[in-house]
Image 1: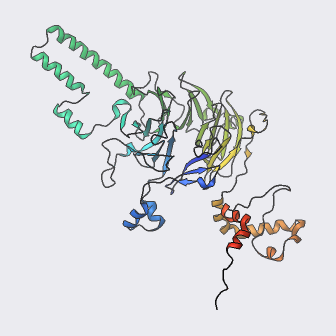
Image 2: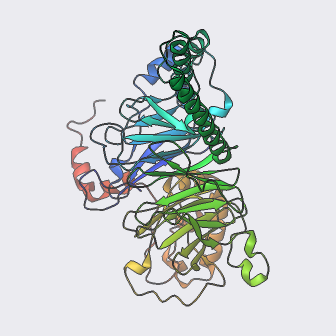
Length: 514
């Protein structure tokens, strides 16, 4: 959920979303005004290019779009100056910068200098495919994790690379390699410096004591370099980087990998912390970081969650997972399926986790207890919380829409009586886009069930014969006194308020000629 930027009074009224398999679009939805919903532009003249290439219709235009988005990161600190949204795509190494203000992909391409952009040339290796992305709190830097375990840092304004984590992982270009092999001058080449020292020693420009001192410095440098390389090799990820988090002052970066490593890096020196890596109980799948309390929640492959304190460099909480699978009572305290998404509340005291077992759990971080347990008919795939914590947005398997939930604790007193022993079944609303698709397939079953329900109701005589014999029967309220929404889009009923004006405008000006 993004903050308001369209002048509305709501403190959180915009939702950024990307489609799943087969949907290559990036959209923004407004919870306050439906006419502000829009799709982000991926370049000018897509229809003209598709027509030129012989790709007609919506299918032809869709082939020119970017691959489906797998992750995105947003920061509004410098949204007026340059792009504030970065996306990575499936089986794609290059990251793209977008502007939420313009609603288009206007920023530079985040890539290494030796990567080819053209699809006609050789693509970057598969190990360079992006798997995670994050933006610093200042809005100046973007970090992209790869399938090979390397994290690249880019400048958002220019798109130029600014190093990598680990520091030596940046691939040298072919030109740089030729320069090193020929012994040409190259900035930062330690071998060139040593050759200059040896050359000065052979010319007699240095006395014996200077030569001995240079030799001692070279030996000490080699030992320090060996220790540094061993430290980097130990801390580096061997598999994909699944999550990146940065603190609010750009001092520390946290990365979680599929190799069960949690690594803390210095943001300026690109070196790992001396205590890195910290081994997790199971391979990580996602990470969520709250900058105010400097806590990071890591979802694990054993359906559990660990909370890591980046200040004390220790794991402070365990939520579920294989370590609790000992008794039936403890099994209630853990998810039974892979965790699809997680997120902190605005104050960092609540942690929301969604799982493919069809439930969402709310954990109280200070006490380490599960305080809420919600069950859905369709497994949730992702979630997002508003900056105020009042609203929760979820997406579900097989559903096109985004469900928006409201926290009742903001409106009335809620008494938490221990850990819930069974989930609360949520009444999911059906999006309008899905109603149109389902009506065509379910009109027969709907008419039969509605007719059976009406046989037991005393208001059967109130309907006319056309309604009884036809398939279109008005929906009945679930309980007396409740309001039932039609589920129709606004265009179907907004003109009803001006029906007389429409009839007046549509009156014929003259009699039809025979």
